[in-house]
Image 1 (cartoon, rainbow, N blue to C red):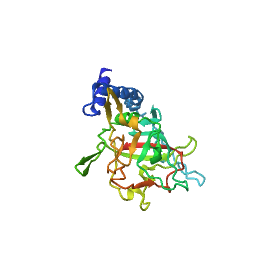
Image 2 (cartoon, rainbow, N blue to C red):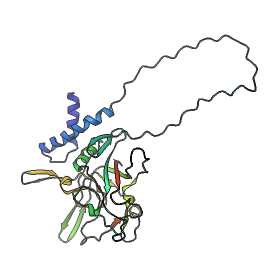
Image 3 (tube, helix red, strand yellow):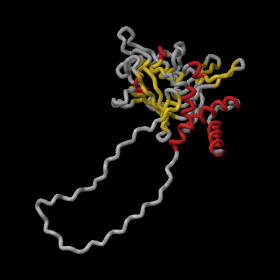
Length: 300
């Protein structure tokens, strides 16, 4: 028991932010320990069993074989049964968040938060891909009730390392960009269906984004870029501290606000004075307004 406690403590502290206070570290440790009580049982390996001895063959008395008959059926062939991929073994981890510790993925629930099919407002500019309630729904594809800090803790349990969000810095009249860091991620999305209805195929979340200029799919231009686990920030102000993405609602960013839990590796400015708006919802692919969806996050 002491060994497990030590390992969890080292795990939680190893993936914190440089300069974290002991209070912050203990907060993350508390989240991770609670979550590990759910996840660790799924990770236990089965104990090896001793091989079953093979029975010795019984001698068969020699006999004269019967002549073949036209009605004798052909012997049955013991063909192997085709194997089918097993479904993810998901466990509830936090509200609206599930984890599969074996397949190394998490998923969380959301709804489509923009109406890309309204004939009166067919162009929906995007700066976010996923946000929290009452934050950025007018410019985000998906809204989720999953708490950003809980998603962060779930990604730590998968063994992923968070980095830092990208930042913008003015050096005189020159704006310079420091790209986000963190482990690379693959993010897909699918419509949520009742248990008795087959779920549609997952697609990359970026498939639902197009360019404002010519409505080309996003990844046609940025196929070599990717998502990173940037990890947002801990904010200290007036004797209080909080996780910035929890307070401001930034879950998965498309442009860089420097507070995202998950960032796009290439930086785009949300300031129209610096860079013109680039991205819109791909109306040909985005589901209807308020459709329930499931976001899946895996290691790249």
